[in-house]
Length: 418
Ligand SMILES: [Zn+2]
Image (cartoon, rainbow, N blue to C red; front, side, top):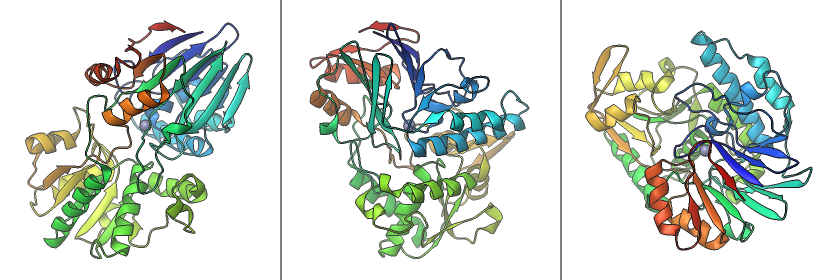
């Protein structure tokens, strides 16, 4: 059996790992990099297993399903969200004049999808189990030729307000290979409770002075998590009554999937009838409907476009306002990055001074270094392959786990014999 890393080697983005035996070849994820063109990944797979619905794990499915009918395996909700995100991608690309893909290719992804937690292929079996991270995220175990490979995809061990984290004790023990993400391989984050406290304190501070709060976020999962967090805080009297809005039609559609699949979430969420119909958070279609002062949760997550760019332009020059960034990573060309680091941003040749407070509070859905070390010490893999992390992060993690397991940080295209 061999493993070949087609994407996500020494970087975050474009995840795709092939596992091949004499009789069978499967892909673990089939992603794209946000900033670049869709990858030309191999297509000769008997099945493609999708860990979760983020585009860096799914974005190349449009190309795969353009003239083929592959077998795609993953959770129900991953299919629903992925297909919506791919439709959105088709729309954005066609607005830029790229007509290579159309809506029928996104629909074909849905038609090719098998939603199940175990699959048997010739001489090879696949098992999926919950990974934390986002709704529907799965850890994949592949068994063939008497060998066992565990692939984490993106995962999170600690619980969040809406989703239970990965239960390490449920993972298969002593696999031949553990392929794990290493996004935060070198970073230990404060406990989540601490971060949520910081977040609430920042909100209170801005609300007290009657400022607006902009929360740029992704339409899938982070938007729902944020809206639910604020909705619950207002309901419980932790935050005062305030105008709170979401502006993202995509996020609004995903709320519907979350309500429908509420059994994927925590006990508290399951107990509610329609947990993602909020009491104090209203959905708007456009920024002109906002009644200030307000808290607005909107896309894009990196502030490149959409309501988050418009509101950043509108609100950045007033020091009473605040922008809260909850993602750890910001692309170098993101307006939010220069707003935070240099106090200005440029868009369409215009420069904006940022006097509003810009706070980064990393409410991430990824395992940090402590959680990554824990998974290795609990699972006890013979060999550990680090993917989905910059080289520096992977190397910092390798130092920590080197005495427990053989560690490999493969390059793109590297083949590992198992
Ligand atoms: Zn992810």
